Image (cartoon, rainbow, N blue to C red; front, side, top):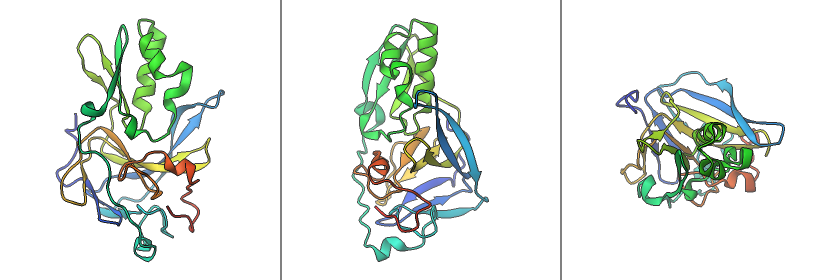
Length: 237
């Protein structure tokens, strides 16, 4: 996995500034659509932006031309200090074991997308994974988790069960919470820290764009607390 990423495709975190995206990565919006019980059940494709070789995405939450940076981070003295761990996912993850699946969970990566809540929750479903429907929903919920907090694994081969993504970026919209969510980076696109080092390259991660996360550059769900909306030109973190 990750073979589709081109050599020049990456996201670079700048010091107290935007995310610099290179390599003509597709950019689109994506909405979490809720089911009859009010739980997110599917991802719904939205607007696709014109292709650009490079672009800068707002990280402070205050740009007047969201999702792109307009230099507002300088005006508001945005402090975007990166506090996220550089440890690998598996070093931080807790494992839940079931009869046919394992589920790993790195809680510090939670982006509050809530796909893990349906049908009793991914953890309960994993413990009941000898039942085919429970196994199927557990895999769906783990794979729909945009931040990669949750990963389902086969018990027999110990392989991760991952959705297949092309290298791309989505701007998440949360229809239930009526807020704009994080930047969803898919398909093993490298994330480069402002100090020049790289975070572990993963199939799916979510980056903060409201400016309020306590786990920068990654999302921690703060966009819901601060009611961030990317159509509000005066919002900032």
